[in-house]
Length: 71
Image 1 (cartoon, helix red, strand yellow):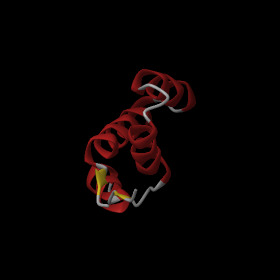
Image 2 (cartoon, helix red, strand yellow; image 1 turned 120 degrees about the horizontal axis):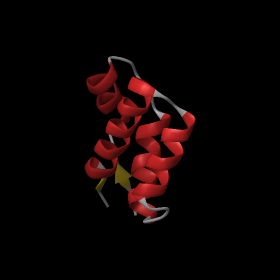
Image 3 (cartoon, rainbow, N blue to C red; image 1 turned 120 degrees about the vertical axis):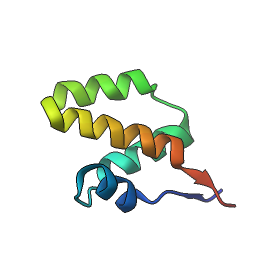
């Protein structure tokens, strides 16, 4: 199966910068269905602080919701 996700678009719209790791993680978690969203958000909250964690969680959730099966 092939999935598509515009990680650059999501991160630029959310932060103004091209960040690929967090949106790709969101897409991967959706496709693999593990670990849970709560676990990822908890890890992000421990790793980052303030506005950075909020932006990363927004990016992660958007990517999770926007990844699409194309084949």
